[in-house]
Image (cartoon, rainbow, N blue to C red):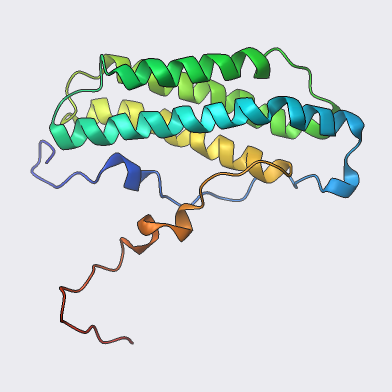
Length: 184
């Protein structure tokens, strides 16, 4: 419950918002040169580390909201930050070839947004506070969106397709067992 008495959905469901298509077209495998393939090989692990960090932050946020405790001091934040820093060392230290520039831009933006989410989570001492939760969730969603755009920019990178998961069914409440729902 928030201050107004409305039910606050778990943070994981808030990550399920549809993401618009990336602003630039993806590079197809036929358009890639050896330098782009080398870039893909170099940033695949950092991409996964950023994706893992985003998932860990979302998990901490869900735990904090359900337990009515803040996220500050949760040990999972240190793990998320370690993964993010390791990814940032590679992402910010590499010079992408022309074929990887679009992808790289999204990775840099994801790195910054996820760092902002971690920083906000470290300050969040009251999970029931909408402002504190939003301060974590806003950069987290932005970071995950950047990861999705990066995944669409080059082959070999994947994110969870929330439209195919349980979150996609939130608009259709489940019927109690034994009750058949009429379909239109």
